[in-house]
Amino acid sequence: MGYTGFTLVMPFLPLFIAQLGVSDVGEVAMWTGLSLGVTPGLTAILAPAWGRLGDRFGRKIMVERSLVSFVVLFTAMAFVTSVWQVLALRAIQGLFAGYGSLSVAMAAESAPRDRMPSAIGAVQTAQRIGPGVGPVIGGLLAGFVGLRRAFVATAMFYLVALVIVHAMYDDRAIHAQPADAAETGRVTFRNVLAFRNFILLLTVIFGLQFVDRSFGPVLPLYVEQVGVTHGNVPIVSGALFSIMAFTGALGHHFCGKLLRVSGGTGSGPSRTGYASRTVIAGGAAVAAAGAGLFGLSGNLWIMAAASVLLGLGIGAAMTASYSAAGAVIPPGAHGAGFGLLTSASLIGMASSPFIAGFVGGASIRIVFFADLALMGILAAVVRKTMTD
Image (cartoon, rainbow, N blue to C red; front, top):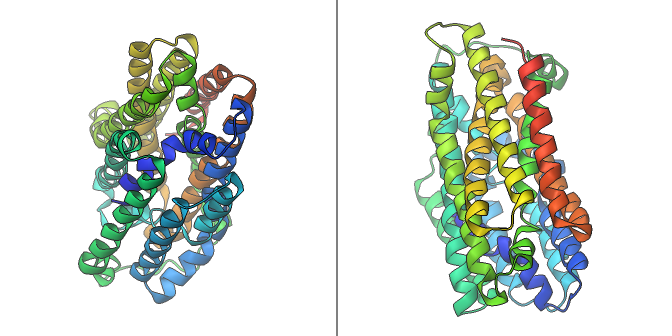
């Protein structure tokens, strides 16, 4: 529910900022990048502190705290009168966000190691399905009731999510430890960084998230540039965002099967590493092709095909990266290991809109070609350096 609500309005933030009186395309892209990037940026800084509080007081209360803040802040967003107020509210959201960052680690911790890719893929599929639905609903709402009322609708989605978590989430069951769980002693971040391929996987997750989030500040503007009438921009760009989200969910969902196929008939860590390397490199290459298509053509059908490639490639590579990391992190280090992975993801999420917004002010196509280059480099580096 939270991810659906968020994407009711955030893909159309450039249009809302334009409504607030910012007329220059470059300035719209810049303010959009700042507003989209500040929340995950602050979340990445505060995530360790919220994680320690969650360990002490329970993760359920931390998630409820975050959801309550989103209900209040998205309601307030409907009443802003200037662009700096949007940026300020997004900054405050970053101080209280973090409800989604624990879910992947929890899935990895709760699943047997041989089913970890499926568990991680299932969680990431759910996180993608919401954004797949949200932009279409948001585009329709923006057309019928206006963007301001769409922010109120977003707040209601978070309210429903809050009620569901309060009524159905059992913190004790999620964090139950087996009776024979082994003590692994104190694990430091230096220990975690020394795990096989871990620093490479941190870089890959950052890069995938960076490319995935680079479209937020520029895609609606690009859709209008290629000839779509202003009134139809929310619906068309919303459909493209939804295609990326749904195909990304498919990439997450089928990643476990891709890992098994890529790993062949063998077993053991070397086959797991080979499979992960193949899926990550292949997914990044597919995403590079999608970014290239966006940059080369403004045809809407080609853009739809590019969205499919981007979603599938990033979805499969992201789940394979988390699974490869999970395969080398011992159970006693899951909190530290997945905390670092989440920080890499959030840094990519935060920095991408900033950079894409500034670059998009000069040329939106440059953003797509930069994504192409980044995904191509990641595919080559993973293929060359990731060990089995």
